[in-house]
Amino acid sequence: MEDRTLSLDPSASSFTIRSTITGHGQEGEFIPRNHHLNINGGTTEFSWQIWKACGDNPIFPQGGTWVYDRAGWCPGAPTDVHYANLDPFVTPGDQVSVDYYLDNATGDSRYIVNHFLVSYGAANFSNDAKLVEIIRPSLRDEYRRLNSICMLPEIVIQNTGSDTLYEADITYSVTGGTTATFHWMGTLAFMESEKVILPVNDHSFWTTSSSNPAFTATISNPNGAADQYAQNNSLTAAYVPADEYQGDLNLRFKTNNNPNENKLYLYNSTGSVVYQRTNLTANTTYTDHLQLAPGCYRLLFTDSGNDGLSFWANSSQGSGYFQFKEGNGVKQNFKTDFGSMFVYDFYTTGSVGLEENEEARYVLLYPNPANNKLHLQMNGEAGSQVQVDIYNPLGQLVQSTQLTHSGQMQTHELSTDQLQNGWYQVRITNGAKTTTQSLVIQH
Image 1: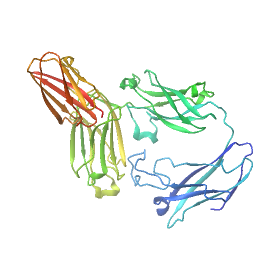
Image 2: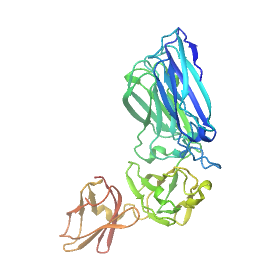
Image 3: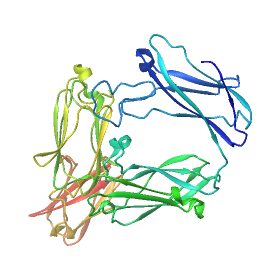
């Protein structure tokens, strides 16, 4: 392209070129290329590739070829924006020459190009923190894949003060609920931003009687002092609560012709994997019975081919499905044209038989979470045989131990170094008495 000569505002303090570029035509749309900005005829100061992954497009499923990666855009998704800071190369009041060009294009390569020179004045405040947006919980289209949630909220904060931001307080709550506080610490220069995941102690944080629940977050006390511009400190986002289940759960899904592209993970509220399937067989139906302790869980199903379990433009991969069931009824029937992945958060009150019972008062498992050793303290008659069976979330027996009790209160030591990290069900049988307790392994 021909050069552009721009006059810089002498009263401005900072200058940025804001670029949005999208490629079109067969070669322009589906071939990645580097684009460049040259300032004042020197060496290339800015260079970046125009390419965008579309398999995780928030607007899904769609008709058409929405999953194919494209040059700077995806159907239904916001166009990528690139920012080039000119401050190291220019002086306010100067004339500046800007040359935009791209690597050699072939065939039908067309680009829609928008460059804007943005001039900024000096910072209005020295000590100012901003809450930019709420990623989850949220009803915004661009965050649709991550919502609804019953786990950890995620927000974006920004330092809009000239002083470097090192710490701030973030308070947050849902409609009618209790307020939590998180003390953020980090390093953000002027106008830098950061995603922040906020801790939630338990599911009661999300409890609300409102039919239109909303999540509110506020940032305050930047660098331990008063915020000089409080108008940008708070945001509120409406949301849909995560589904709640009672009793045992069932996953039922069928693979297509390319099972090597798929992986399934189930995470608990601490981020530990409690169940997974990663080595799948083609055109196979899997039905897994999950016995889960009370709490919030996140189901993640991925497809490295970025075309889901079925996609009309790739009929050769066949077709699969994925269902989430409570008892015998289908609770969720997931869309199979999901691109690269889908996420599903849910809360369960716990499987039948996992609640504390009368006999549990006489049985103690510790430490819990356990590492390589587990202690079992219990009452019992002398010479009685105690059966200790440990089951994974699928209800599969993974460890069985028989103990001889010496009488009254006794502590037995069990090895757990062969168990993988995750949640387990421990069933202790002593004669006619059976006790079931939950156990978490964290090596």
